[in-house]
Image 1 (cartoon, one colour):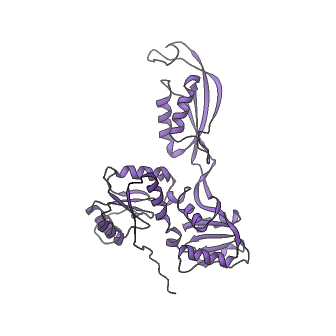
Image 2 (cartoon, rainbow, N blue to C red; image 1 turned 45 degrees about the vertical axis):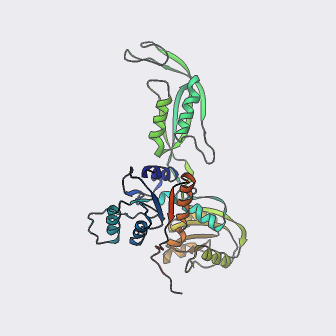
Image 3 (cartoon, rainbow, N blue to C red; image 1 turned 90 degrees about the vertical axis):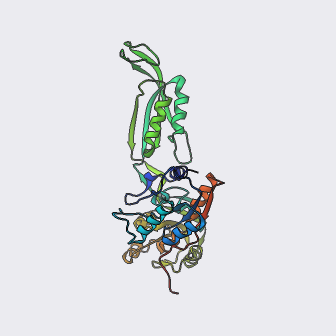
Length: 365
């Protein structure tokens, strides 16, 4: 299988456009046309993981955390990152990362955390805005269904769990082509009036080129009239963190013990307990301190995340219980996300879950 087949599918699930500005997700090492025999799935790329890939015959490593975050000015083997890149190139091993873009989509990192905790009615905690656009175009009646379907097939018209969402208004368009035209209807040099549909639909802005190309290819006119409007609408399916309901209210200490057992963390650091039952739970894999206010605003009883600093625990202010379960621990099940996605799409493709524990933090109990 070609590497680009795998990466194209992963990016259809977790588009690179959804990664944070500081991130470096995507193909980091390798040729998109490279033949892939087997992929090794890991949370981090380390020298031990590279050795595992070599020994198992895996020529693709799929990771959550990008091996290369900042720019590399030289490859001398001085750092572990440099040594990993050198080793990957020497052994023709491709390296791909899906990081904050996988954090930001339904079915990604935070969905898996919710699944492990048994949460229900899960929604994005901090949905993004400014990621949607509206297409308006004008189509002759007889060609309307064909053009609309082409636009939908390109990824437009999705609102939540609905697809093919659009609005149409009948009207009359006019145009006149000059001597260099071959109009679909009418004659050059004469004003023509045509019964048309004004067709409106929305699409994620990263799909704009694909949607417009599909429109132009399916539309019968030589010159296709269309408008693109930026939208400030919140995109409810995309964003960081999730919030859901625990099936039955549970005592705080019991819930935290359950969380510790579920994620196998050495310790759970938490803000002062509030002696209240846990019903609504907010989660964010990795460093989620920036979402404390959103978790409080969502009326969550507890916020499960990692990398909270000393002063950030004060932000609970008796309104929520903050629980830091560790960065690795909160994201460890991301390997399962990759595995489930890829086996569903490519059931005969060879995949391996890395057996290397890449957690750099240890606990003395």
